[in-house]
Image 1 (cartoon, rainbow, N blue to C red):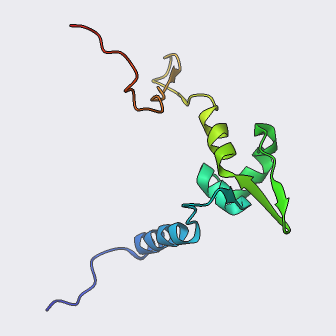
Image 2 (cartoon, rainbow, N blue to C red):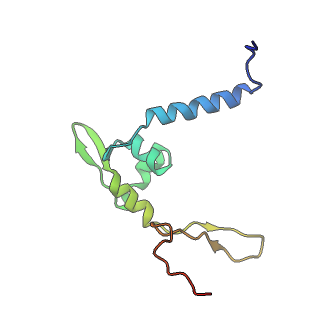
Length: 114
């Protein structure tokens, strides 16, 4: 029986453990109201960036028992109503927009007749 550890660098192992901890720390499934840290995690940004940017997006926290709480639906709306990501192409090319798929995955789009 081979009990040797897999060949993985210490940095890769630390990175994997941090990702696992983040998942455990921010289990927001089933929650409708999120703390600042949870809301930042949901939005994919750092808590400091979230605190600075939330007011300009119209995200206003509720004060409940000394905690700032954000409604998850409001976060979703802010993300969904934001502009499309603009990518830079090769030097000299015009910027292009990354298409955003419709919420229903395109099922409501009529198909063209061949």
